[in-house]
Image 1 (cartoon, rainbow, N blue to C red):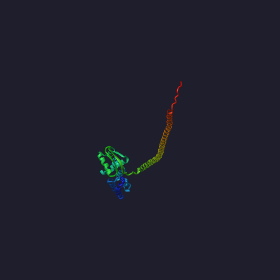
Image 2 (cartoon, helix red, strand yellow):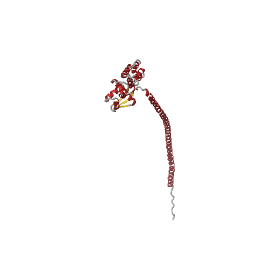
Image 3 (cartoon, rainbow, N blue to C red):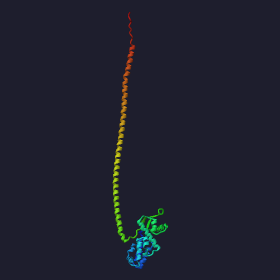
Amino acid sequence: MDLGTHLASKLEPFVLMSKSAKGAAAAKLVQDATSAHGVYVFGELLELPNIQELSKSEQHQQYYSLLQLFAYRTYQDYLQHRDALPQLSPTQITKLKHLSLVSFAMERRILPYSDLLQALQISTIRELEDLIIDAIYLDILRGKLDQKEQQFEVEYTMGRDLEPDKIGAVLRSLEDWSETTGSVLTTLDNKLSSLSSQTVALALAEEDHKRILTTNLKEILEKQKENKAAGKRGMAGGSAYRKDRDDDSMDVDDPAESSKGKNRKASQEIASKPRSSKRNRF
């Protein structure tokens, strides 16, 4: 459930009773509504004819102003115009301070204790924190008490009644917000389109890189295979060359051995022939 959405139902009994209440009874109804526990919105009651008539009565006009105070304004406004308003009870003062907290929270996210103490005419931080805690339990705002920094950090707040003469300003603010939001969405769409294009380009670049890497690796492997094959052919050629050299050496040695055999045979023949001697004649 959204914050404060249940509060409108708390006003319904007073709306029903106001249809038959006029004059002093309507004024008493305003006092009761502004004092009732859990009633923090009053716009629907303000619009009713019997309540509107109070603004035209000199005797009861101050009660219509009282209802406007609780619907639209803050405790500071009460201090400035208290002479034109009925005297508030402690319960009404506490409720008006709660509503003032809501108004401050609608304007700023960080509420310094010093500002709140002054605006709400509270003397101690303990009393201020108790007031804020009560408002949180009443589900009219949410936030965090920061005692170290002496401030209240607003997370969420209910909405207050909107004055009729401020509807135009709210509409202009909504139009500005819509225009700003549209510009932000357009910028985000452009960014997303750019990121999408970059993603596609990076994917294509990565694919090209993988393709080139695969081609290079394939070429390197083929080159390595070619080098190994060439090395094997070189080793086979070297072995054949050494074998031919060995055969040539053996062929050169054979004539020498044959020559040695012939020389030995010739020597033997010479030794076997008888020597002829010639005698000298005198």
